[in-house]
Image: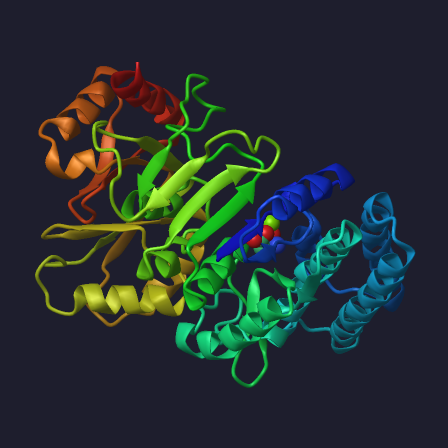
Length: 454
Ligand code: ASP
Ligand code: MG
């Protein structure tokens, strides 16, 4: 039994949806299909509620959403009965969206709860399209919203995690019953609900994570993630045109690359699949003949020293000075608590006797400064921020057991005359990351890629 997930860019045209249907129909295994919103729709939903709106703006917005999805439906669904049923379902979903948006417009406030309800509508609509497209070619598909199916979350709005045990209890018997009836479930990605029924999303691009959660709960044999790229690459081909595709990654390698900037998988996708040793395959919907990248528990190719270089462009280092910052007990916990309360993610940390340096996203610097100003007396004497920082991450199992790899990385960087600021090695067995000035990013990436891949 398999879980197949299709991203929004695979669904944005009639041609894409036809390809998706073909991939599903040509695979004889029992499968659950998970879909994202049509690409661009989640952005539109978020943008719409990012400012106050009048009633007539809501009407126009709903009409636009309806037309966009209807155009796709008209493009590929030929069967009259299927078309009619899909239109009725779509109306039902749009009514839900309309109500949420009117509520928001009247109350003139956007609560995290409303925002998550609104965001979830993109997937609720795309599921109707994909299920109808499959029915149209004779597949017994059944569209399902994740909250209705019973994907349970911890209730953190905007960034929820799934409760795997509760979700398994809910979904396993339902999916089994659908398989018994010969049905192919098509499920919304991106969100679930709390036990009390509140819709909560898994964070942007969270449908990959949804699919991995479903694979875990159903003990799937494989999880396939279908996108509009060939899989993981040795580096971003927009920067280095000699980038090569990666056939295989270990769970750790894929997790590090996803966390540190490779935008192939949602960073938390690996977790649930790994717990059950489920193989993840990343494939291109538009080039299904390509191998893609296989992520699996063991048997990873270890011949190569490093496999990939990823990066994050908009980072900052926040340096926190205080007398004896390095040894005073509780300083680190005080600082990280303040930053956690302000919702600031720390990517890396280095401490010395007089200073604690933290790597954070550039967008978070103002919030971080404000939060740290509230810390206990004596903890923070002075703060320095260096922005325009880029983070590079070099990933490969080879880093953990081959000698001299780090030396080769840093020699290549030094030969470019690039200054390295923060380095983190050893936290992960398979990844080194370090920061450079943003203006040096591209040539640093090119130099490392040349060293290992030419
Ligand atoms: N539609 C959601 C987003 O764009 C989830 C996803 O695409 O995976 O973030
Ligand atoms: Mg998306």
